[in-house]
Length: 511
Image (cartoon, rainbow, N blue to C red; front, side):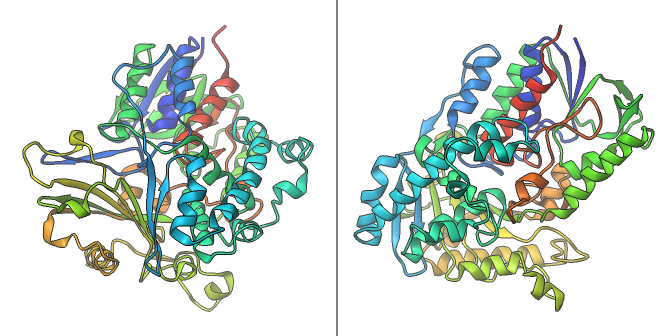
């Protein structure tokens, strides 16, 4: 039996804690925030409840497998499949209600966008499916190593099918001839905080997975997932402590030996699982280590530094009374920017533009994503026309020195006003019914989760080698492991849970 300290109680940390406790280890989870969940957080105001991070679950089999591996289905956690995955409104006014089942999508595309569009998308997804079967086992479900790419190539499909040298945009152009379909595909790059013109072609598996396995909601909000996983971990003997910040990860004889909290308490450990941004984790390592370990740590820091940080998110949590019927009943909406490339140019200025002084900046006419669950559990009792909306726009990370300073006086409130005006200009004027507006910027996310710059996914997938620059699950020090959105295989609820499974398998069961 090993003594395991898990630093951070995001979903990755909680899932790792549950698996390791089920394996017979002595597990302690330390979370610096007052509650668990990390970016899978919940905010409440006078009976309104808001998911402030992920707003849908894909690949529900990954969650089911987590619970099966640790004791069976949990009580009180129910999943609902959305019949309409999302309502998309394009710059030309076209509205597409995208079905939640893959087989229904081609007909919906033909009806909304014109004949032949469904066939274009179906061709893309067929190619994505072949790629999915190449990448899922060696890349998503296994540790990333120098042998990962050769294993993918030798799987029988061939390098040309994966085409890692192509961007997601370029890969899609082989099937898609309608610019609205290109825009639909481009959006999936933002699931990893990336620019579709720079993100690699394997991200085409993201829409495949979403449309093949469905979009799911949890009544009461997705924060219920974190609650259920915490309960499972504790039922297996894990101890979860909130309000405890880890300041340092100690080493002895070339491996981790424990952690030290900000209050100076030392907790011995044989294994440390870090569910925190990798750059921050490397900064916690003390310097008392053999040369080989120090060199490995330095190399890991260099790899993180070479990667482009992911984009951030500017969030509005909106509480309503008296919302008319026509503004209710749509769970997910995306109102696309008129100039999607301009949006990515604002957030990720090109190297040439940066050379002449261009800085990342808030998007003037952003794409707006709205989650508005029709769920009595997240609304106050007795309020007619109540609504609890999560509104997100892509935004530059918080970087006062080289980019956008989200703490600049007046910026957040002024941009919140602007986003509401953009919504109104696209036919969704909800301002008359607003009773509360909570604003959350990348600077707020940085403060709440200790994520540098408030980057949602740590590093982006920009560039063909981005996946290999993402921190591996095995840390540079023996006994240190990384889980969560900043580590392999990446961000998003299913991938975070897969990272926990990879790490639990690395650690193994207690003897």
